[in-house]
Amino acid sequence: MPLYLPHFNLQNYNTLASPVCADFFVSVKDEEELQAAIKFAKEKNFPLLVLGGGSNIVLHENFPGLAIHVQLLGKELVREDDEFYYVKAAAGENWSDFVDYCLDEGFFGLENLSLIPGNVGAAPIQNIGAYGVELKDVFSELSAVDVKSGLSITFTPESCQFGYRDSVFKNALLDQFIITSVTFKLGKKPNLNIQYPALQAALVGYSPQEITPELVSQVVCDIRRSKLPDPKQIPNVGSFFKNPIITPSKLVELQQTYPDIVSYPVDETRVKLAAGWLIDRAGWKGRELEATVHAEQALVLTNPKRLKGTAVLALASAIKEAILLKFGVELEQEPRNYP
Ligand code: FAD
Ligand code: NAP
Image 1: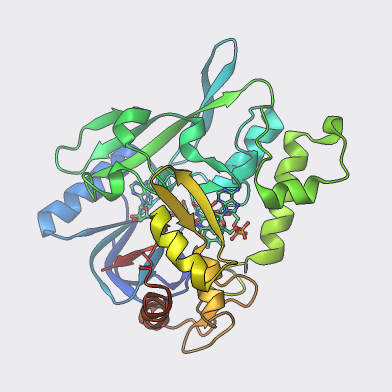
Image 2 (image 1 turned 180 degrees about the vertical axis):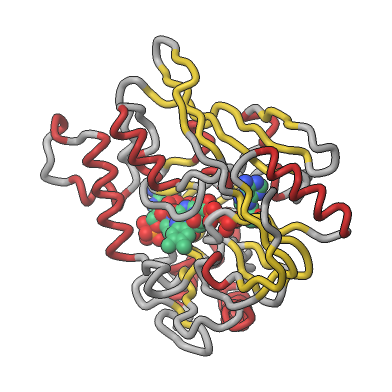
């Protein structure tokens, strides 16, 4: 039987180190314990807070319900064909350790996603992405428990409806499923994606033979360590805002005033702006209220005083207002607020 701990401080379970409490907390290690926890919450009419590594959530007040820490562990090669290995990992596996394991085993495709904090189970929620690769590029299927019926359901790539830092689990199926495992389709041979500018720059000087998946992973880790604060030292949740998507005509309008504005074409009707550039240009990089805009990367808001999430939300709100006023562009928050 899992243990239900009352009035539980979640400070060590979220990378913003927000010191808020859940009415109850439980850690589940297998599907049976997960089912029991869901039943416990239903009987008491408690809302659920599903916790992985807590690296993409903002806990701003006490959570009036049950926090379930998903700790299901295990990984296995489930099948293979001529080109691919299909590798299944339980939701509670640490993402970064799983990437390292795959590299060691010669399962290729995850190298650009090295060192992203959090657990496997949360990775499909926002279709994690970095350095030109997204989870959807290596995704085969996932299993999830339907909170209402208790049934385990398999989701294909199509049914996950992956988008840019987005999936069906953030939209139509919000809070309806708890992911228990994810299966990845990983190459038997390396198929490197090194087009991303920061990667290309870091790989200058290496011969094509020297550029292996291990090297790409190492370079990604080096770049990340140089720019991003380690949440253990300086609490943060990575990028606080998504990069805004605008129309090409809005870009032309902005370029009249800001010819150096950073943008990337998405398709014929959409352009992506670098939110970090907008925040920097509006003078917010390095600024401190109760929370702080990281000096190396303006897209990252930090909580060095380990205050409640409200401190970071106040800073985020001031930034959003400033960006709207200066550029006429609306920033959308990436991490989810609780409660
Ligand atoms: P949590 O924060 O615990 O949960 C996030 C959401 O998923 C919550 O709504 C939660 O309820 C839900 N959830 C968690 N587990 C499950 C489950 N098993 N079933 C159903 N729902 C679940 N993200 C990127 O995309 N790319 C990056 O490069 C990147 N870099 C980062 C760098 C830093 C320094 C930090 C702090 C964060 C970064 N992130 C990045 C954001 C974050 O790491 C990812 O979103 C990650 O997938 C979150 O995993 P987690 O286990 O911590 O999720
Ligand atoms: P960066 O290299 O300084 O680039 C700034 C932004 O420009 C990025 O957000 C990236 O968008 C975009 N970009 C750069 N080159 C691009 C290209 N050729 N095509 C399309 N878009 C391009 O970014 P960074 O902050 O150091 O982050 C590096 C990578 O890690 C990015 O992919 C970023 O998303 C990821 N990351 C994510 C988080 C998070 O919490 N979500 C935190 C840290 C890093 P994209 O974001 O769309 O890639």
